[in-house]
Image 1 (cartoon, rainbow, N blue to C red):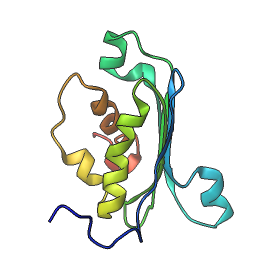
Image 2 (image 1 turned 90 degrees about the vertical axis):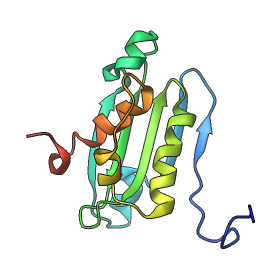
Image 3 (image 1 turned 120 degrees about the vertical axis):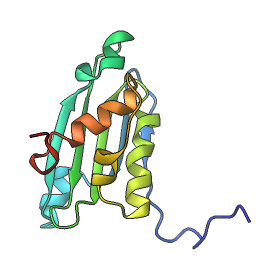
Image 4 (image 1 turned 60 degrees about the vertical axis):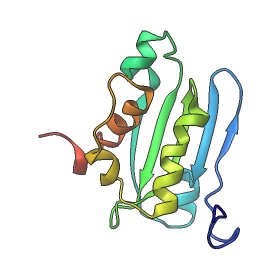
Length: 131
């Protein structure tokens, strides 16, 4: 019942280094995407632009997400900052579900929360920007 379907094939494998601040990554980096000739759009945002991070005085770090411009699927993400290893799971799940980044844009996020910053970053992409 509770077993993962499909065995180990097709898993999205994230990584986190538990330093201070944490560094977490999943999928392709910009360098890897360029080397493979994969088109992508990129959004970045300093950790210090997240309301909750400011409130907790945990503003060190940055975030980056790469999406496929045709499918809007996340192809990579990297986060350096407070609880980066926890926050990265949002992108892992989107990637595993093969869901569009629009899923995150359309979600109602809790304010103020660290994860809300992920949505804000994704919305920095022109295709998702508020008019």
